[in-house]
Image (cartoon, rainbow, N blue to C red; front, side, top):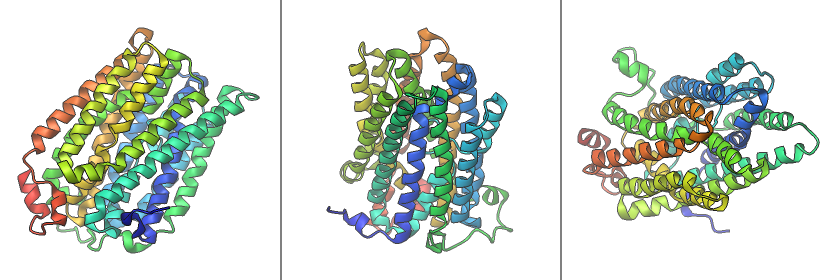
Length: 431
């Protein structure tokens, strides 16, 4: 098999970071397909589930905010291990309790992904760590393959959990079959901690922020200084995008297909396997497209039509057409991810990468955390189960327009790899 040049040159630490991404997203994908069905079988109502998912994402936000803003000072590996431990603990708690307040507490303190996508402190810290061991010119391409690895893992996790639950239900009650998936999620959290422990100190920043006693309080708290204007502007836009996406997290999307067409777990797993594979493949084309039309244009040109397709899903009269719209949407929906991640890493100082990525990631999680509460209320009314798709599409299209207006005159930071005279300070002043 021919290995792309960008991957052929990866160090051992980079491959380990790819392994942590794959392992974690496999668990997220597995849980997302059955999570709402599991909570329904526990006896929770749709509004209660929306509350639990909102508190879960808000808790992930708080965890991420602390761990990512302190990772460059305390240690990236240490914070990743803490995140893995919280992931395992949340899985155990969800598997062995049915009390609403305990589930909400476990979701708030631990790390649970109802969307099948990244939550918690992992992605921001791993992006910063990868940037330490990957040449800047190869960053976007490596991030594209990194996104591909995550999408493939999510797809395999969805497929595995769907077929596992369906097979177990031949002799077990549905609740017990879903609980097995939750226990597997907890075990993967333990495996993740072991993998992270094998990463070397090369992923840590060369210049630590430990000498922060004399720094302004904002810098000590947030971990960012000169990059704060760029980070805050991006954070606001990313929060809007994720707030829209939170209305149709993968768990609720799977539940919608279950309600609308009566799809069983195995069929749902197959559908979201295909969807996430398409999303991963699309990410591989992002770096090539960005090289031709630019980072910003790649983000907007691919993201905007994907949101139109999202709004078309509930308008389809038959299941095959609804599945087709979903798959078409996934085939382009993730092309903005590696370019967005590379952009964020490029415009900030190396010693502020974990914090900057963490804050923008927290903004995304915060936005996504609020919407499941409203989505749960909408799903509790049969006549309104299509509305979340329309709200999500409209908000995400608004994000695309605002992003383009705000950054269309800004020189793409990736050009620093070609033109050394362009630095992050000049980019920050442009923004």
